[in-house]
Image (cartoon, rainbow over all chains, first blue to last red; front, side):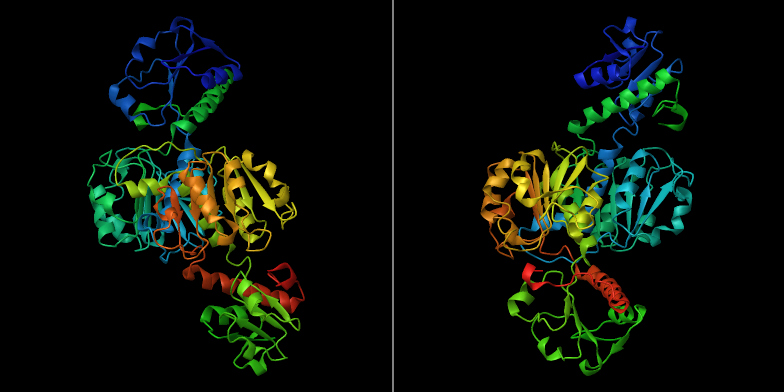
Length: 299
Length: 299
């Protein structure tokens, strides 16, 4: 099997292709598959009929679907799941920072006790049963009392845990201490965190979002924070994004906002290479690929 | 068995005594054991000859040893280990906040990418093989590449992991990415983190201290941070404590300082009650107590 890497090949990806037992093709004409490291622009020139599979480097494919590039004449796979460990880690970092009031400590510049409830003994809802959500669960379980997975259909992808369906959560939000959002942007998840949901959470609740900004109604979140209906928020994604300077969320002392950086470039290349290697191995063995893109479902 | 609780009894402790199968004694004269919830002052009046065991509510006993209250005519046990889950959680919160640069994000008030290395794939040295260190290891292992336990004698208390003796670490500091300190204040640990040790760490290193302030040479740490020899620090304990206003560490953007609050009162009472219940059960069953104080070793 011959794999072209474009528009930018690095040694990690070349090594991954070879470690999987394939060879690197210099020209599209010589390739059976394409590992595409760029965005939707420019890929069309590479889509020769001989290319039977395209591996993308991003985990979310909204922009690809909007651009209409994903065709039905070959397989397309995203990097969904490849970055799960580092994104999950960032979600846990944000949740802990919120629960332990680290933002307030960091901003204050003086010794001052701030009461807080550790995650020990608390119940955290993790919304999203994909790779990130499952990894968040694995990281939080040794820390908390209980992690509840909330998924589209009440089932986790690995089948290991009883989950609650998103549609049924309305009556459970008041039973959880904190919420971690790790879902893609779909019509179902848009505005999932709205005024009603926030009102159901306890006053000590922290809301963490590492999915997509559109999952949270930003104004409702800002209102809930400023009125004390919830305690804190940790956001790696916002709506709009970037969040404009002067937005009230920037000024709230218990809010931590990072710049859509849960998957930092430093870790991305290593994780992508591992994902590419695994998918080439699967392709050559005739096994299902990780992260196959299904345009009808939106990811 | 009859247990007196003084100077302050709460329902959680009373329940713990009863759940362990003992009864609560209202007067010292009627008691076989004392659960003492205060500091060293005032306990002497309670130490009737009939009291064969005293359970303290603090995990560290330096002030008790200094006060010379701990006698050899009965058993004394501390709450060492009781608060390990929440203190370990706080250590992980500080380490993640440092590695993910959350302090800088929280202070900046605007959207700005800050490169960072997640813990995924990194190697963390946890100094201290007691309950806190072991729990930090358990929380970090699913997140990092590798956790190295550093203990007094190269053995962990639970015997589950190969550890490196503190005395041998000099040649290993340059092999770790981050350091978490969870050791008591003893002559051996005083100034353990000094200029030489800090110089051996990589420039991206984060140093977290949830043990005692004296373990770190504060001036050396401030120098290492200001000169960029290490990246960040997360401190729940400092020397001096409280850290005075205007100290350079307060102003360093990547330093997070909390106010010796890794064991917040909200969680303390629940954890102490569980510890007391377990120790009464052990005492009645003739099993070794948790946290027996041995004045010669200093804890």
